[in-house]
Length: 621
Image 1 (cartoon, rainbow, N blue to C red):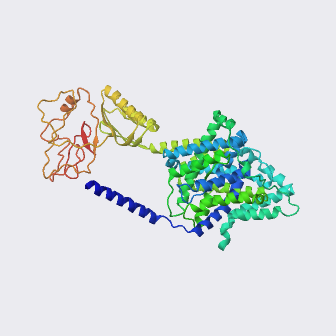
Image 2: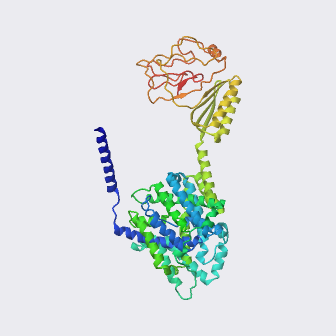
């Protein structure tokens, strides 16, 4: 009977959960979803083509990746409103890869990157990428954006870029000189500049005009100018979409034996995954709909890249520009981002001749604007004001990427971030002072190997003080690593071997204070060479209750003192009916403990403890 009732209850709960999920799911407004999909399509079309051109591959491959990003990644679960496709952030990396290994090897690299993404999602490492320092992420984006801007300055003026980012930067003065000497290059440069200016200022246009994507307006202007008589600027070269598909063969797969190919696969995997998941977090802040599920989203990105690799297309990531356009257009479900892939496919198949009218300089201008947004120069002074250490990590990451390559820059940035975090976590406060015949060293914070020089200096200073007693209080240390612990214990053993009395208080778990009921009845005296026996405290009465649950107790080092310590202690402090003449009574007339040498009295009246110099058991702070 009970089992039947339990089964019925579980079924009712499941039904209620499904009903609640159905009620909370956004309602589909078909007209709004279709409108949003058209807006995303208009934003994505010039970006797909521009990224392909910047990557050094045929424009058709960019459109194929855009179609996959819509129809495959868009239809999969993970994120609801995030839109995927070829991204400007990977353009420089793809261009370097194509230049070194050829377009044919690109498919293999993207294919295995997609497989790795699926594996990472299946083992639930999607949220791992959120643990990367924000300074490294921003430095990575800036390191991508800066070379992209300088690299696209050349096609914006109908010229060819020299090569590496540093070479491109150094060649800008010569590029300007050559452009001013060529009328057609000046026309192309004018279109590129107009495109960049429109991209920055279009959002300030009044009314519904600003809802039209600035890139689409620039493309329209560019097509009109290119059609004028006497204008001979470079336009897009477009072929057959299906003919551009390049399925990797045995020769390409044999390239996996090349360590450089393996490095490229890992680089593509890390950068594409990080960019997609960081974009997901940004898009989630733009709307109040369902949140991104990171592991399913990583699997969806991997599925898209796997298919893109099989077709020899560009790698796919989530793209902020398309995603924000999707949100602003009022989309609520995955339908809009899926349909935008369908519109891309239809346009490429039915109207390929229109693409051939688009000037290259306009597409380069679109990417110069994208590079500026990736670079985000305003983030550098902002980071400087917020955290100069993180600013150093961010700047280092950017400079290394520009000077070397993307993977090297990210790895060095991650290493710098880890070192910065380790140094900051190893904040150790060390105080030294002398009290009568005792040299005291008190430590608090995190004592790690990074602070070992300060620890050694403090210990040596205590030893050089020339006092017969040394007290090392480490109860305030929240983390004591092996290196510091070994150094402290070694110092303690050395000083005790010299005949000094060293009291070592190490951090440890709080333990319950033994009560009178727990204490065994002593029948035989303890040997003189062992630890000193506990003094018998007054039994707990109504006026002296036991410590409450908030009392804090610390474990003290119980390492035996020198053999003659008990004798010297007995000679120095004569026994008496109380606690000794030098220390006074631990309880006042009201039964409340006072801090008179035997530890701080508990606020409820318990004054357990010995002299802070000699207690080898438990003492309350």
